[in-house]
Amino acid sequence: MGEPVKRTRSSFSVSEELPERLQAVLRSRWALACLAVLGVLLLMWPVSGGNKGTVKPEQKSLPSAKGGSIKTDMERELSAILSEIDGAGNVAVSITLASEGISSFAVNTKETKTSTEETDKGGTVRKTADTSISQDVVMMTGNQSPLLVEKKSPQVKGVLVVAAGASDSAVKERIMKAVATLLDIPASKVLVLPRE
Image (cartoon, rainbow, N blue to C red):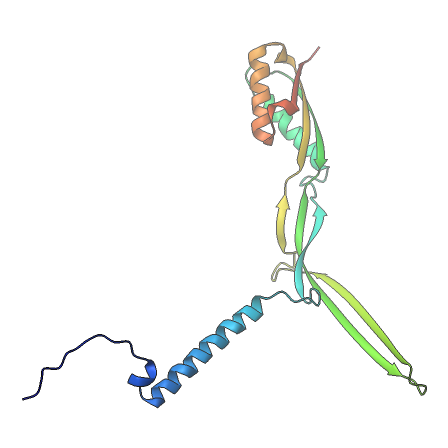
């Protein structure tokens, strides 16, 4: 009888174990996977030729809900709330705004580039390039209103509050905290004074 066969682990290549047909399939799947990854990368790669057919936000100031200015509406609403604080009494408010807020609407931007090259009889080459850009606000289907991308609240720089009960330090403190909380500003931007 023959000697027992020793089984040892040895490294082997795909070409030794697999038939040629299977090797071709594996190579083609590998090639397909590589092409798919390359395609995805090309889709994500930024195009250097400008923004063709992209959607960019268009910014406009916020209109007031009651037809007045945003500042006037904010002052009126804040005065009404602060006058409800126990001991505040009659309240007047003045707000200083850095901006009145911005609404950004989606805009379709289309950029068209054309170039022509002319050669005259003398062999002189003249090149002409023309770029045209058009922008259209994106409208929502159904109600035909612009598509809102982002809405930023007005930026408050400071608030002056004149209240009848502000001579009491506890009432003054409550008014200051209320204004800072409602407008999301630091208390250092709020000044509360007593009414004469």
